[in-house]
Image 1 (cartoon, rainbow, N blue to C red):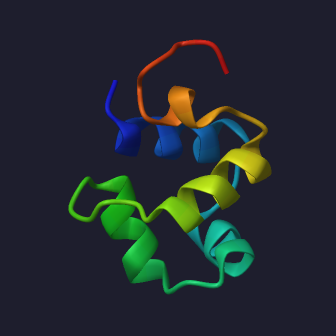
Image 2: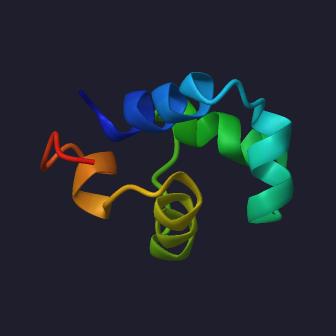
Length: 68
C-alpha cells in the first residue's frame, strides 16, 4: 500500500474529512488532497504531524511496516 492510500485510509477509518485534517495541519485542502492522491510528496514536517495525529509510526504511513 502506498503512503497516499495509508493516509486516506487512516482518515476515513476515523470518519474525518479532509477539512478536519487540514485544520489540524494548517494547510489548504487542495494541498492535502494532492497528498492523498499521490500527486505531491508529503514534507517531513507534515508526515510527523500526521503520525502524531493518527498515533502511528512513519514506517507505517510510508509502507515500510504494517505495524501501526
